Image 1 (cartoon, one colour):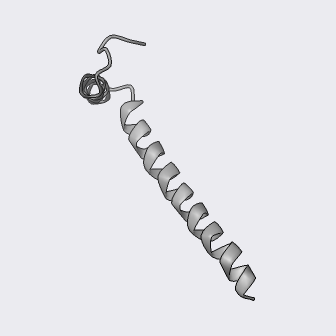
Image 2 (cartoon, rainbow, N blue to C red):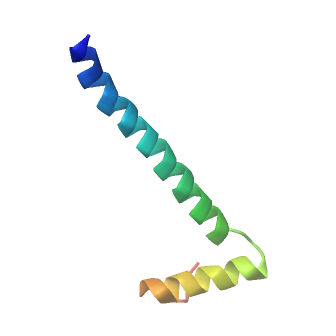
Length: 57
């Protein structure tokens, strides 16, 4: 029983962390991948803050 807890406990924590990480990453990308004017402004602003170039696809 203790062996199951030692194996399954960290596995559950890891899967939960991965799900939360993925949801947050998708939410950020959704804000930057839109096709309206505010999304374009956010995309340019994030590239400028990240040190990348503002011109791109």
